[in-house]
Image (cartoon, rainbow, N blue to C red; front, top):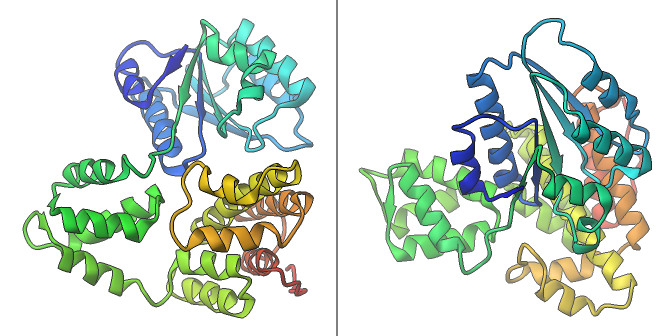
Length: 345
């Protein structure tokens, strides 16, 4: 059964389903939906949690064994299955269908997926998740450009702030469609604003405050192929205490976009049209930056860099060896089109 994020909040006030699927490409909205499900589980004393990250070598027997075994430490448990590639493969399809047919008792399975395209939604496993009686499928849609001002206004209201239209317009221009950036800006603005009325001058001051080393500046430099500037930006962000997962999130977001566009362009679709119709939208100067970057590598190379990003995620979590910051520098330089052998340890 499909749920919108708004419907999810009401649903979680009642009995929990055996399986939840959160599917979408916006990291903030997907994270918030998953957090709401986790909070509902905690409120009902689901005190054990296991997380599985699915890659090409994932052993689906781990899910089968988890579903068949009883918890050793708690009466109720939450299992999380994260499939960043969005395709479980043949063995994964069988495991998911088996689990859906016989969900584990006193267990909630939370499945995280990227947005499923029309072809994928017609597969047997996806149809079972979307239409299954034991499953709640939460589809996360991006906030488009026309909806963004109202979305920001609502978020400001949640933070106890109201804003002039000029201030809203400045925020829209500042974040360029990135909702996580919007939330970060609003948190910062709460510290700067006097009272609860936000004006354009306060927004301008906030933008100037973060102008020296900026994650989005790093991403733009990498897209532009300015490797030296991108590397300086990375070191500056590290020096200012920005954590590696935040930087990896930004780089991985760009890589997913570039890999998708490169694949579609390789199939004969005009790049200009792909960029103009991209979801979420690509705004302003970024259209030219993205266009140049897409043509820097073939689709196979962008997909390889996405796999490199997954390895860095494992390094951050302590699940793989290697120097995280050197790996982030390597990834940044390769997006920019430069190869440089840095130490891996």
